Image (tube, rainbow, N blue to C red; front, side, top):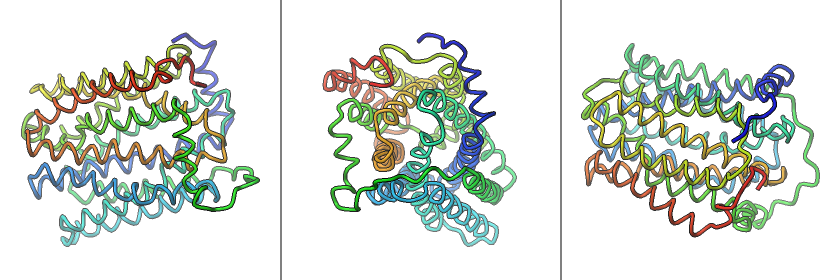
Length: 411
């Protein structure tokens, strides 16, 4: 990595001179704060009611299924219609959903089944929101500063991911209703910000909606070994190494702490990610990008194992911070390659498939972790997941030589 001439001034100029970028950041941050605070509250509620690792894993599965079912609807919609309005519709639905959950908790009728229904609705909204908002970013910043825009956006998002879980844990201490009510207000604010983004120029020459065009994102990715290798590496590495769903078990049963500890454990990867995002905003990745990504995923696997065997909360938090920093390197490289190597008219469909890969790795990974924890215990599940991640890195380094040889973010 080498220092850019003055990238922080570029980032400041983007925020100061580009109102669309400011509103984009604000919308994503508010939505992330709301979602991550809600996830902590949901995890604690479910485990408190069931004491079941499988139930925690099912939360991830219920979040993932809408992404799986809607991927090939999301892409064409994001490529044909106003992405701002799609984002608004998603955030309004999210606000209503968590608001109803708050009401149900307040009045005492929201049971575990109701929580899972709410998680499923949130999963549907997020299935549309995330790829649509990702596809929106390249249209509001110049291509020359896209890497800085992604790193800056990631920095703000990681700050929200730090604050969101900690805030969710603290608010839960005031009562289970509180984090859901606050999340409803934050989602409403996110929708307001996205509509303040000026409408992008109409996309011309849109291809007819056919079966071929719907699956064009898959065809595009399959024809680009670099993108396919990047997305599939993240998919399988995090699918095996994800331990997020097990954090309530570690917080309560291994570290012997309460909701506040769960909030800090959920926030710790984001602290490391924020530090790394700030570094990447200051220093450009200009060489050995492919090997850097493979190395970062390997570090992710190693520190998953460290976290799994730790019985000290300080070491656990530190391991999660390193894990989060390594993951951010992978995220910035993956996001930059996907955005820079994909034409604008394809970004909605490609980002929808990307979102499916991310959902599979995160939410389906949570389900896999829950099943493994039920069989091997949480520590055994973490160790097996970390080792599996290291194996995947080795296989992908051999299977995708084009990924190994990538030197710059433009491929």
